[in-house]
Image (cartoon, rainbow, N blue to C red; front, side, top):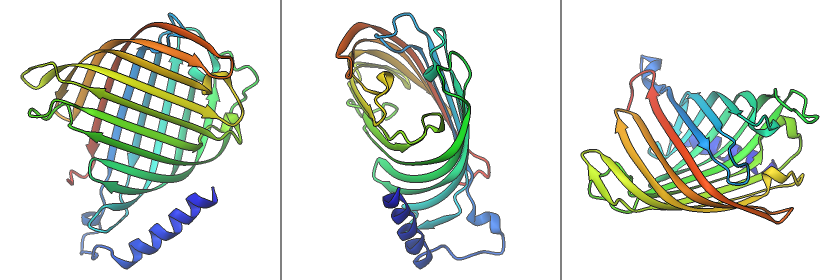
Length: 269
């Protein structure tokens, strides 16, 4: 937490030294980007037959930029809604949140430090997890290369990671999760693409919950297609999933549909 506060302080100082001039129209300096993402399917080989749907929406306001807009400060409001068919507490929750982020944009990626307030309600089979509200703090990073929508690129891939306290229902639990995926564009049909891929995920937490300590490796095929600012892909892969604390491994087919969409309410670039 102390490290994140230090990042916020130094980012604010840097912004104060190099800001855009204020015009006569305050809205000229404000951008309101937002995003929606959803993933659903039989996502875990360990939870065979369990269909999960996870939807996330976030609205931001870019209130300060610096270093040629590579550094931004963005208050945000967001909400996450997760539902599954088996009724596990970690897969059945809704969690609205409000906070502020400092974002350092790099070529093909972004690193973000944030702090906020979240209310989390696990509404099915709660296993003692009562609705709770509290502070969240997190550090995230995302980096991608050779976007699948770029017609001359053949090796699209991405990696992301998060560390922090971002579950008030698991108060004090420090969680880390990282994911990487590498694909190859086998063939294209106009703007769409058929992509074999491999992926790996690893996760850990300080309270040693079974579902938070996993390692997965998978390989499969997906079909992706863009429509405006909406990108959709569906596919399947064969997944090896290990629960690290119990040292139990399961294998099986993962079937999924992913949808993402972005916007800017003021229409700025």
